Image 1: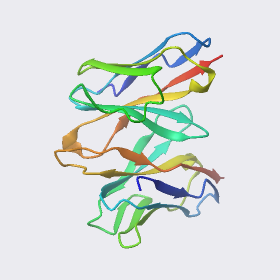
Image 2: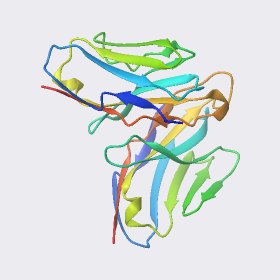
Image 3: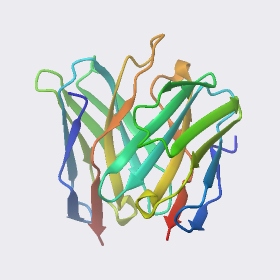
Image 4: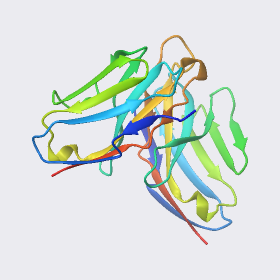
Length: 116
Length: 114
């Protein structure tokens, strides 16, 4: 029930295209859904995050779409660029912002390659 | 701020040796996390601390692994004795409760056990 399932494992997109990565979860206690971006040799870095009280959040070319009833959320990268080539992880956290604090559960990761 | 600092960045050791990984979290952060990343298992949470106290160590693989946080600015992850299957990249991350779930990761320590 703690799992976050991420797909696809790898994704190849042409420059200017749209990259879409999907995640699904089971634990309804999750209340914070971040996406992390990791470049080779670096640690993951927070890219964008959403809470379940909204269905969409956009920051520049990056958008999270959230479907609470389906327990799914996705990352859309518009106008994908070669510099976006990285591994992307979705994650979920229960009790974020409360007095207790849960674990950040990560998806398996998606290796994105954007061809010029 | 300098971000989360980890040392060493690379460690190569022989099976059976003791390995100590070090982490300095971001000043003012009250949570510290240790993760392990491998191709096979992805990113795994090993243990995390709140205000220097271990909260959940259920991800620690076995008794060969131990972690300490003697003060708010320093933590260690120790493997004794090390085995080839411990080869991985180990990340430390920190966060502040008031910032919700945002965790800041260090650059990682690449451990190779031969």
